[in-house]
Image (cartoon, rainbow, N blue to C red; front, side, top):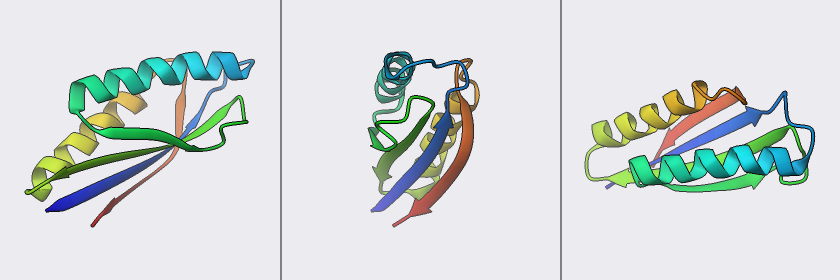
Amino acid sequence: MVIGVLKLDLFFPYAHSLKDKRRILHGFKDRVRRRYNVALAEVDFQDKWQRALLGIVSLNSQQTIVEEVLGHVLADALNLQEAEVAGQEIRYV
């Protein structure tokens, strides 16, 4: 069994409040969960209105499938109109 963990550091240049950030994050998190069946949570910067650190986890018996799923999630994050990916890290267990 392979477990892949993607850490995404997101920056929201157009967010002017926590409400703005949460609106953007809520849509992204719902879309990613629905499309890729991954576990996802905001793990840091909950009180910062222009930043979020997301932890995304996928597991499978084949590493190539986990790599593909996390690659798609990262691509979706890079295509966000209202957020920028400030950092990323993928680890496999």
